[in-house]
Length: 398
Image (cartoon, rainbow, N blue to C red):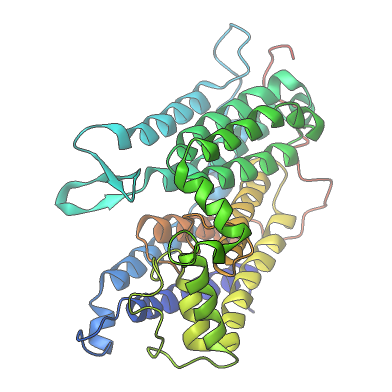
């Protein structure tokens, strides 16, 4: 019988395979020759697909029932009234330190004016923001489950989670506004599901919004993107060029597309065609039919993931599942909105499709955790809300 975890695995693998083929198609250039099967199988994208598939399989075999058991953490060992568990504090410090690596001379790499990459031995590189994007979900899920829903209703117990999410997002927003905003949104969803009161989070919303506005106004290229979104034809050859070429690619695809490999916009017209704007190439070459298949695969993952989360036990498993689904779904929606010109241009990839190594591997691993939850919790659990309902483990006063 096909289980929800199987649906996630099959849909994710289908997206990865389509991503490899479409990335190679987007990388075609005049005089480079046709894209052959050998060329696809020996490409860097195929290697990333293999790594992502392995990560998903390994994650799907994790003993999540033991790993995500908040009671193993025990009560806080600090006797200073701190609401933060030492292990969670250590994990938070590790994520903050990881994000700061992009500013270390000799390690960080600047691409298109942003420092998002870290060099690794052997010429490889990775994005620390991708690790932080998924890592913060685990930390916040553990923190909310450790505190318990009742304690999370206290503003002073909610504040450490908000502080961590804000600090991580601020470091990411400095270089990548889209990913930072995505982290803030997913973190807020976890904290709300974990028992935090929405009105308390709204108290800190004005400073967060002010920070995002400042990040936009202090960056000329971000202001230009907002203006281009409002009217791309005001400067069609400069700031509006990207959006116009994306619309052209989508319009030329019509119902069934020009055919795989026969798109024209990838030949120097559409920038970032193999990364952030790969969906435009899919629309041009595979048409509405191909685009519909892609959207259907994303919906299948979200539907199956929701079925798994609904029967997961209250506490860290359910909260982590909610965070994974929120991050995966919101990232897909943001990218699709940008490519179809329903949102300003921002550098955020389409999950499991846009060219990338770190993103593919970590996204696949996160979906693998949902598959592991499907194996660990096969029976339907009584639904009493999304937050942990067991007594809090901490003994410090609220």
